[in-house]
Length: 168
Image 1 (tube, rainbow, N blue to C red):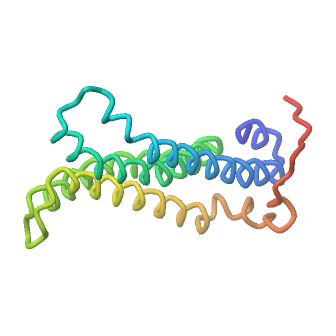
Image 2: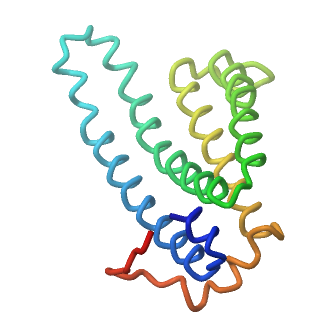
């Protein structure tokens, strides 16, 4: 929808879709996160070794929380992609891989004076990586000249609306 509005040169509609889409994804990201958090006890009923379940529970907790920044990053990425500005989000997605590997190396094995956290360290590494790429893309979108015209109409378009007439 962002791409269609952009093709019509309707910056108010682009801004409207961005704002409402962001909040819609934020709500669903929290709901998914809560579902994973409260549903992690299913591991106890999957006939897994109790020792494995005990190790997996804190990891699952971190993974459930990391869903929120991941969904929000994907929201920002889709917005940027809809405006044909794909390079930054792609670069951040690619940069996330070595960042996650490096953080895993630090936190799983306790290198460079970091505590040895093993499986929970992998969870922290993923959470940190996802928050980092979300924040960086958010900074770009809020400050880059490509997106300024869509942020400039925020006072008039950034209102959550229950209805919207869509014409494609």
